[in-house]
Image 1 (spheres, rainbow, N blue to C red):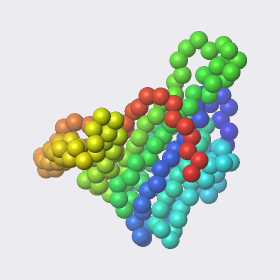
Image 2 (image 1 turned 135 degrees about the vertical axis):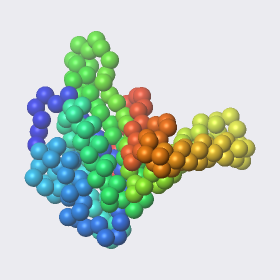
Image 3 (image 1 turned 90 degrees about the vertical axis):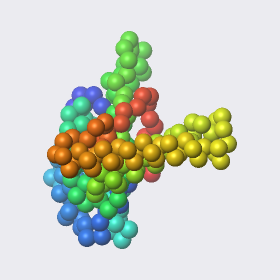
Length: 212
């Protein structure tokens, strides 16, 4: 359903490995926050993207995969929808996964095309993490961080020299996991950020729409 004067085009992109017992009905319930936000009455009705060249929301029952490359018009209230979606996907995920969300400021684009823009774009990019347990989520976060660090440092060092850096990252995540386990045992929230069932990561700059 079109949202008139929607300030953002919101692109959701990711792939989630699902438990083997998850059916389309389970997925329809898990993704209800998304399709209701789009103004649809079912997942199938909302599975098509705002852009026809994007695959949309797809369920591969043979591979037990949820694949999302989907755009919807909306506002900042979509962030609440993401929170609900992450909690639901935690219940059906087989392993940890990251989902990228990009907010494109359509109002800024319109003003820029007309040559009337005098402010800053409200574009935003975040990542949410889902998984069956905190350990699987931390594993995904660790893998992403290691890849980012290696990509950055390989500009100056050979990859074979970075083993110590990777080991240091692993120590940090091991400590975070220990803190999480201890805090759960004591009934207290974990120290630091990103140790819960889902995490948000903010980044600057405009990200291109994914077409696959």
